[in-house]
Length: 281
Image (cartoon, rainbow, N blue to C red; front, side, top):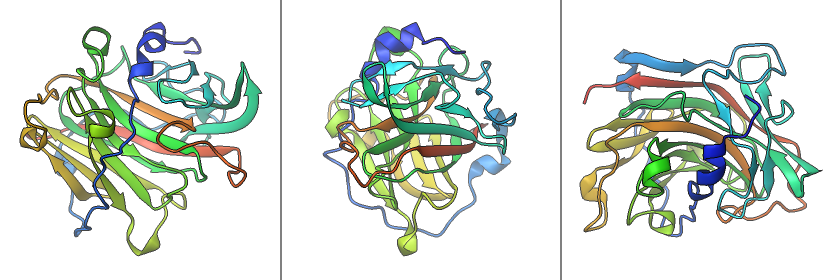
C-alpha cells in the first residue's frame, strides 16, 4: 500500500494534461432530479470507515508517489498518513501541506484503483468537501484502464469534478479523448446557486455513463450531457471500455497556477464516500 505504483510513475505524467482553455461558461441551473442510480445496483463502494490515521483500504486503492505528473504541479505526492488517511469520522482526508520534501515545497496525495477495480458505464459518484485557496486543484476522475497499452488521450479520461481553490463556487466536468484533449477537451462549468461555496459543506459529484452518453451532475442536478455527436468532426468516442477511479489534491500546475501568500496550509480534501452503480443503458 505504501509503495509507489511503477506503472503509474511511468504513465501518469500523461494523465492530467488539462488546461481547459476552451471551457464553456457556467451551466444553466435546473431543478434537481432523482438519479436513476438510486434504483440501480451498487457494484463497488468505499465508505472510508476505520480509525483515524489509518490508510485507505489496500484492496481498493493504490498510491501514486512522486511529483509533477505532467502539469507543472508543485507537490510531492506521498503515501504517508499525514497526507492521505482516514479521519476516524467516516471520511478520507487528502491533505496538502507546505513543507520541504524531497526537493518539493509542498506535499499531498493521489490514489487510484489501478489493478484493483475498473468499470465500463454506470453511475460514479462521490460526496466531497473541498479545500480553499489559490493554487489548490482537487479532482475526482476516471481514466481508461487500458492506459498502459493505449496511452493518453486514446485511453480516454472523464473528469467528474475538477476545482480551482481560488474559485470556491465553481467546478468543471470534462471529457478527453483523441483529438479533444487538454485545451480542446469537451468541458463545462457548474456554479453553485446563491453564491454558495464548495468548501463550506459536502456535495455529491457524479457522472451517469451510458454506452453513447455521459451526463455530469452536482447534487443530482444535471448540467452537461455529451454524446458522440458532441465531439469534433473526425474524432472517436473512446468511452466503451473499463475505466479506473482517481482521487487527488494537487498544488499548483497549469490549471490553477501556484499558491500565493493568501493560501493557508494545510488544506484538506474530505471524501465521504465513493460509489459505483450499474445503470440501465
